[in-house]
Length: 434
Image 1: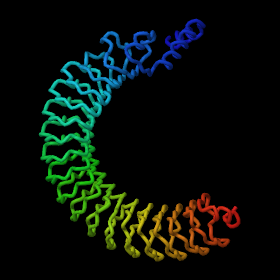
Image 2 (image 1 turned 90 degrees about the vertical axis):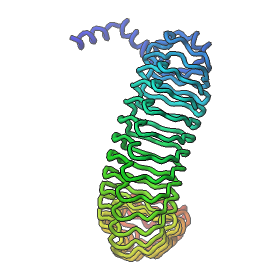
Image 3 (image 1 turned 45 degrees about the vertical axis):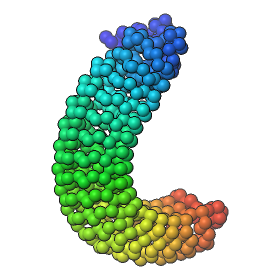
Image 4 (image 1 turned 135 degrees about the horizontal axis):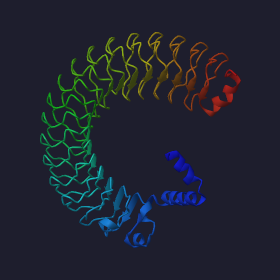
């Protein structure tokens, strides 16, 4: 019956033209920018769903567009009046810094963003229970008492200046993502973070001991800022954690049993330079971003590891048996310039990238038959004899200064992409298989 009615309406030329006209108006006026004067003169307000407002004088509640969903208050800095109940997203510009009386924000609001200068006390009852995402600007640095944040909040972001104690009970049990700004550096005792939290990010200056039991068992992603350099004791990190990132200044010994077996991605910062003992890295680990310069004893890297990235300073010999057979992607950093004997690279490796200082002879048998992508860095300028590059290779990248003759038979038939210097581009046509 509904399909038949639609068919009748659509075949009516007048109705079809009316529908088409309204669709075009909706497309044209869906997102608009107005100040008070231009808004009063605009006739097609009912098509507006997103309004960018300039100036301090807002329309009355019943003068807003009836289907308005998103309101952006640019250059607005007046006491807020009651807003329409259709609103789901409200964004203040950088100038706004006024108290918000309880009951001002509509119960339909799901996303609220404050601009740079907002720094007002927020009493309980200010935020509606519908609010799911809340972002404070850089200047905000007010205490947030328990009961202030609504029970449906899932994402909370603080700005640069926020550095207040967060008492237990402040963060609602609905919260899943919490981001602190660069200025936050307060103790976080057990009970601070709700059991719903899955992603936690600390800012640049955070450098407090995290006692065992402070991080909830729901946490899957934990990111520390650059200043964090505290010992992390066994039992601190929850067994739910899958991704852990340390900042640049972290340089503490990580004892066996500290990293949970659930961890799949681990990244150390620029100054980490501690020996990693066998048994420290969990068997679940698949990605290790590492900027240290220590010998890696055989058996240190877990058999599950698939991606390994070394940082700028790493320049150690890597004997056969260092890399597990699970490894598929290996990236060496800027300083690495060591010989790689045949048998060092595992047969599982598909992608290999060398840093700018690498300039060693690569004998035949060095690269495994699994390798598909090979990238050499800036300094590499060695002869590559036939038999060096495996038949599995599809992508080969040289630096712009590579200037060696490539004899016929050197490039495998599997090669589909080759990037290199202008010299080699001219020469490659004579030797690359067709």
